[in-house]
Length: 347
Image (cartoon, rainbow, N blue to C red):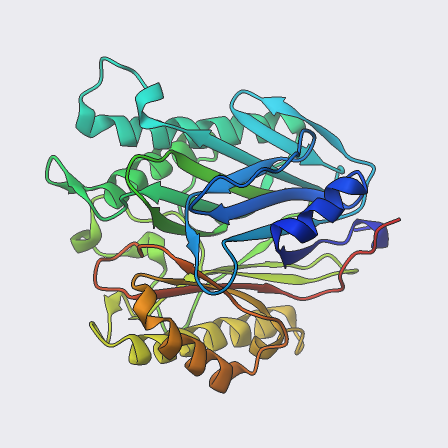
């Protein structure tokens, strides 16, 4: 990878994002905006994923800004709005269940919407000539609600697995890092992703069964994601840690105890960092140097989680806290992370 195509992420306020807009988005690949209300952002050329997940703390909105260096080209492919510099592509898709086949049963519409979204992602990448998905973020309305006796997260896993089989032919091994969080009722399914010209390496945890090998008690269709993805481009190795929770083996541990779940989640993240360093053949990453997003099921738990993460990590960057349902109803907190390499500089 050329040194001028580095990848980085910043978490900004909407006011800070206005500064990127005023400069003409010279180094912005894509944006995810987290807010429970409407925040005006003018981003015609830049894909903007609006996620109806409420930030916790002082800011009413958080902007996740993925940066790289141009020149960029932007466009749409089906439902996907994308932006690319030839080395990376950021894309986003938003689809309401009501926009699926009106003849389908209500209980099937979410599954159909999910499968269509993933088909749109794969078709877009085929059009652009990108073969390697690095990271996918999924935000699903009412993720834990049961419809027709089946939890919506399990419907999503079925749809995602079918799409991976149809377009990639595999649902295990070198699949991308990912997360799936719950958003409020009545919203749209929102997916955004990063893909690269170079393949990443899937990292699995020595403490956990790979999600794609979960036993049938978690559903007929296992989740299709890796615990982390390591990119090994010489100029900038990066580690993308998937949404990680208090799971050992395949079982939830410490149900009902948010402090113990937070501590177990950090043990899992440190295990992934150690495994990534082993695979990379050097001490490239440290848990304390990663950038974090933490999802809390209950806002009242924020003080406990904040204090524990500060104590355990003394993080180099502020942590973003968001209110979202986690994919298992007995999980209270989920944490994701990214880090490694240098931050790109604008021209």
